[in-house]
Amino acid sequence: MSAPSFPVRDRVALITGAGRGIGLRLARELHRRGARIAAVDIDESAAAAAAAGLGPRALAVGADVTDRAAMADAVDRVVAEFGRLDVVIANAGIAPEPATLRTMAGRAFDRVVAVNLTGVFNTVRPALDPIVAAGGHVVVVSSCAAFAPGMAGSPYMITKAAVEQLGRALRVELAAVGASAGVAYFGLVDTEMTHDTLDRDPLGRILATMLPWPLNVRISAEHAARVVADGIERRAARTISPAGWQPYALLRGAVNVVLDSRLARDPRVHELIRRVEARGREPLTQSDFRETGGMG
Image (cartoon, rainbow, N blue to C red; front, side, top):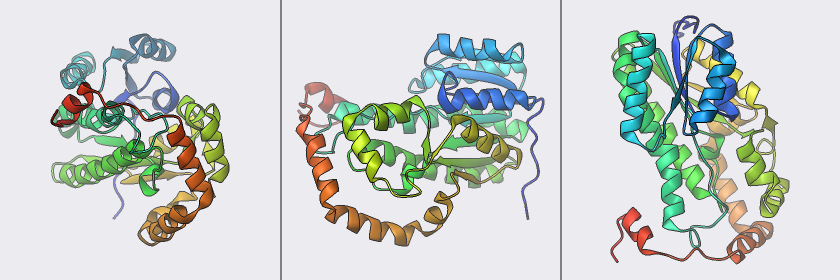
């Protein structure tokens, strides 16, 4: 049985990371379809610019997704402004500097977890009561990176795999109370994050040449926004783009066994890892132990 349609016209949508990239394009796309938009971003000026570009049906909110109290206040502000909250898209995310688990600092790992995983919880949790009251829909943005090994960038893949599980649990839980949730997965999206990671970094450029299909296929942020918007309007359990990732997602249990083995034996990968590690090990500091709960 297919899920009921959920047109976004006249609904209220909160989007994190709305000042740039996919979040900004999604704000524009949902606004074009008639939604009222709460553009949330850690950069308050970017949020303000996004809302100003949309017009009177938009609200700018400056808030850091790693700040649990600030995100609760953001949700309260949106509900006070619009009287309801129908859609939440937990989109904010960051990528780490290239490093192996042997060489990265604990604080770098913790920062990615704080934004990409805990930030999703901080966004979704305070919104759930209004979402249930509205019979609404939540989208958490994972990544096709959740399907693949993450050498030299594992915190990103780790957090995106965890966000996938958060979204799956949330969908089952919300179904019991008349609301819904979905997970969005993208491959390479042509955003500043991709440019910084793969295009502007010398080792990133080497990695980009090694990516096989469909890992090397890029989509625009506008395309990603349309995919998410379409998914919201049909209460999709998941959306994946580009389409080449669909069979990988379905068959990853078998594919990953082969892929991990091949990568572990590939001399080009070995050389790339050695070059990443040659950049230097991040020294451990007392703050690393405090942040990770280690004992000094």
